[in-house]
Amino acid sequence: MSIVFHILKEEYDRLIQAENIYKKAIAAEVRGSPKVKQIGNNEYLYLQRRIGKRVVQEYIGCLHSKKAASVLDSIDKRKKNEESLKKVLNDMNEIKKVLRGKI
Image (cartoon, rainbow, N blue to C red; front, side, top):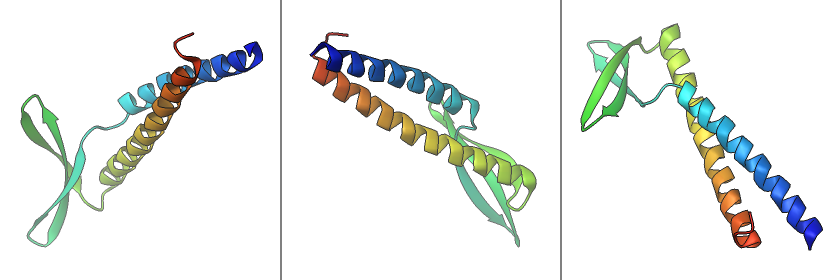
């Protein structure tokens, strides 16, 4: 049983490190939801996010600009990292259940 315990303990430690890495990566990316507004014949990108109780829309630029593309890429990276973090946290909970609080 001790071999299985050590393997699960190593996996749990690896998951803790992965959790920290994903949290840092999420914090480094842009927060908010992209919103496209059409004004006249042009489309503009806004970043919508919540600050306290207020919803704030930050102007990014024309939808086809380089800045808008980089913001959209950053949002996609953040979403992928958040999904991976969820999987890591679920795996950590399963290992905790198997080890029954022995960590």
